[in-house]
Image (cartoon, rainbow, N blue to C red; front, side, top):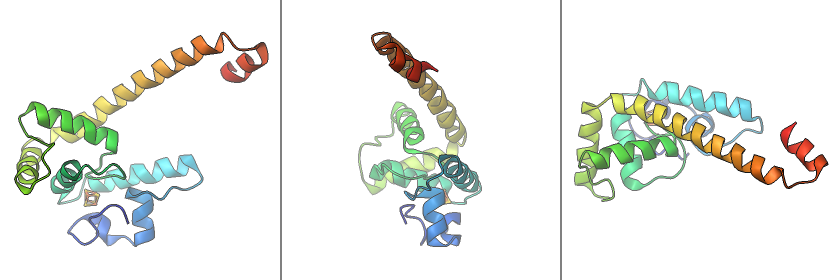
Length: 152
Ligand code: SF4
């Protein structure tokens, strides 16, 4: 179980480990659509979790690179890191003082969760656009049959 909160008061701890792994951890199903639905469900459950802020703060301070914490993916957590740093919280320090500061700050700024998701969604859109433009530029050099495969 990669969530790391199964022994705490987190809602994920109330699920069997195999489900917990699918909803918040590293387990992936073969069906990408089903996987996306499971992740969405995991994130929705996090919204009601009584330790959401502490969970997110722990993942950020420990630099966890995988799974869902506090309802946020690694990319969304990165957005929170940027905002916390701008607010003067030294999230690069992996100590209990920073953890406490970040947890308190997150409790005082509940809007940060939704904003991080929105910012990451916009950043993803930008990345996708750049990728599509690069593919288009490269694809123009390709043979007609490869162009057909790339763009149709
Ligand atoms: S916020 Fe989500 S991942 Fe964190 S303890 Fe709660 S249910 Fe588990």
